[in-house]
Image (cartoon, rainbow, N blue to C red):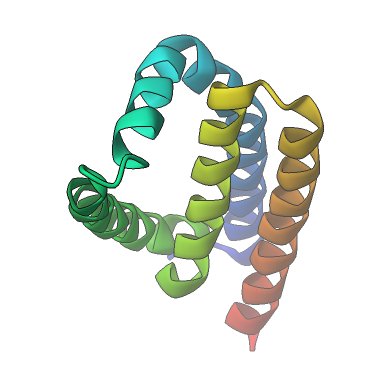
Length: 129
């Protein structure tokens, strides 16, 4: 069984890694997928292909929920809290890849990082009880 100090250290390390990931992923996404996202945006906003876009994003929602479930035991935050945080990260990353809007990205990332830290702290406290 892990000591409380070791648990806190692991949580702190995971939180640091998550914050670094949040800082880096939007720029990587823009470089790697920006052109594809711009094409998808044009296609899926066309009324002719809108239903295809809805179906595509239903699958995306399921995948992100599964990712959240995998992160739950590592972060100690319930998946139903992690899932919307993932949506915020993805939405801000895609928006940046589409429009290179640094202001929107920075404001979303600031709130997201604060949220992750607050949730981690909150659930860490609840675990001690």
